[in-house]
Length: 330
Image (cartoon, rainbow, N blue to C red; front, side, top):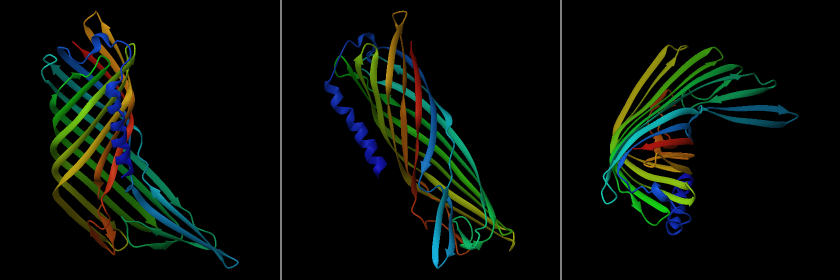
């Protein structure tokens, strides 16, 4: 909820700028004929509350005093590059523009954790992905995390020049989204090997509504902002396999349902424009991008040797990081 409020407040920040103007924007007004091609270079990292995979509690008693050491271990996804490519064709200021873009991003993370014995104490291990809590003397846990994000928009936009220095462009689009997310946890606990493989996948279609704002505050420099809200309807599926080699058991479960999804995206940055040969507009933007995916992570969990869905509330997942846009109009 806190992140959602930040996104909305940041969007509202740009509304007062619509009445402020400095300098001369010149030929860089959005109201022009031509076709624009752009590329966004992304450098993002996923973040979410439900990427925890292990909890340990160590207890040591000395002279009647018990010391408790709690640790919660989470997947730490890597910062990885992504890309967004798009095209927009204009038919003059009074008319609408047609645009299409495609966003691709994926990241992986591999963590290894050695659980050393506690001298004079006990070590308890708990995990939503493994068997019930266990007292151990030594162990090792390995995890592999994967996340993939494939987003396509096809829509229309309406370039508007609110005043000499403020540009406003509302847009709407048909949206396709595919998200693939998985987590493998392998634990060796006092010789007992347990393996859990969780996978989440979503295919959905829907609509995106948003706006771009551009406030020119100096010669060829402007503050750039873009915000959007996406509503989707599609198939959300999860599955888990659980293997315990000591008791030679293997359990599988699949769960699938059609559900609605909500996503928000916010971009804030600094934009620089120039004109080549007196007629070709070129601009670049560097800034910060934040995408919030509501109810994305809904792992199946292990409870009393049974795999079940919905024991924990679905958690949000965010993608955030740097973006660099380069656009050329001809």
